[in-house]
Length: 264
Image (cartoon, rainbow, N blue to C red):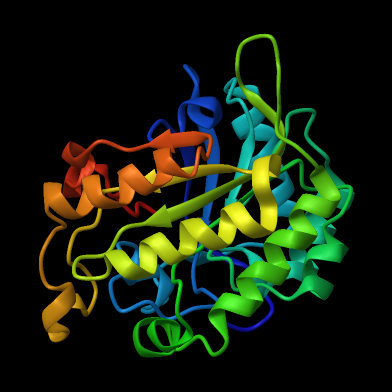
């Protein structure tokens, strides 16, 4: 992607977790490119095909200011890691008075996350796979499990347990997202077990049932359908059995109408 940030959308977003979107929306900035190459990415046009426009660090800072003026609850950076130098510069120019959310795939270097300490208020990583072979097969991410464990551990070290304001909006902490994939409930269950063992009550989990075959998913037989209610409930039961706190998305969210329209 190069060093100059490229963005595909900057706007209030109302379909994040309730404690992130609230009533006024989350001020999302979707960056083009990604540290991963997920074959099923719903944002494939921007993550792998490079759709978007270039912006300077100063222009980014003005975007934060504009979103903040619209009354959003936070500034939400989506897949920004590969532009980390300019991201940091943008916050040196202007630091919003609302929380900064770092929304990523979980495939992060600890050294990179340490550079964000004092900037990011809320980490929103994915924990996509319970087995490394799936990370390599579907995302070209070597050693995904260990990398995600170490990354989330660093996020927890920085932010500690989740904190909310008087209106129930998150102000600090870590929410770990997991998207259930068709034919891979064993992986989902393993992810939940790892989260419980490694992080206990220090994180919230957002269990997502919104999977839709997008990107290159049709080239992979096991991924070329939505998940079934049986698959969803099987993983959900484990979430409850492990007494993991967080959010569970309804299956009706598996609809393309929730995919952003890239208008930049």
